[in-house]
Amino acid sequence: MLRYLSFFCVFFLFSSLSTLTEARDHSNFNANIAVKWDLMNWTPDGYVAVVTIYNFQEHRNIQAPGWRLGWTWAKHEVLWSTVGGQAINQGNCSHFKGNIPVSCMKTPTIVDLKPNTPYNQQIENCCRGGLLSAWSNKHRRTTYISAFQVSVGQAGTSNRTVKLPKNFTFKAPRDRYTCGPAKVVRPTKFLTMDKRRTTQALMTWKITCTYSRNRRNI
Image (cartoon, rainbow, N blue to C red; front, side, top):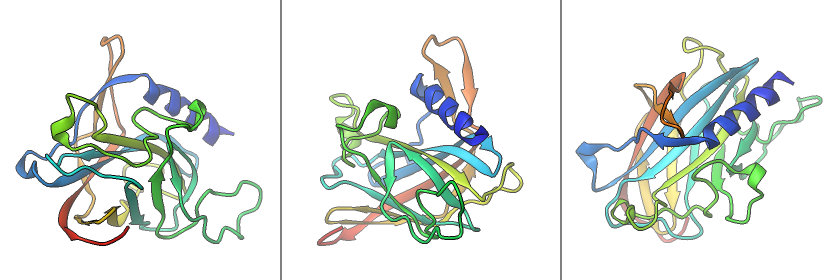
């Protein structure tokens, strides 16, 4: 019960945020996809995190059917639930009794939800079917950002015991990207809508994925 209460508390908190400190890599502005993994709350067996994807490429849009983000867990983590995104494979969860995770895969893959997703299954900047405009279009439509939320179980429950996922992959139609390792960076700061209070993530990881070469399909 505590896991679900904390999960929904973070959901409503994140939905109210109006300003996000961006993950832009100035040294590689023309060709990167930046991924930020913000731990927002600890749970009895893990944490709740918001994962944000930024398309900091100047002229390369992510087209339909959209992006796919994958990784390999460092230990035996599972996804209890997701909001704003969906794990494409559940895997073998037969050893769980009662609550069943949405994914027990050692290497989960997340896709964006569609625009007609019910509001109670969305978070800010989600649900565009995986489409991401290039950074140069940001003044027309702020679709260069995509986000989803995960509740991770069987993980560490403090900054000392949590382990960073590894082997990140970012896939897009006809394009190939190479992702570097996750790195601990300064925690993301958030400004509330009334601009009177600043909060910050408990821990933030950053992954940078660079365009490498064309591919025929996703």
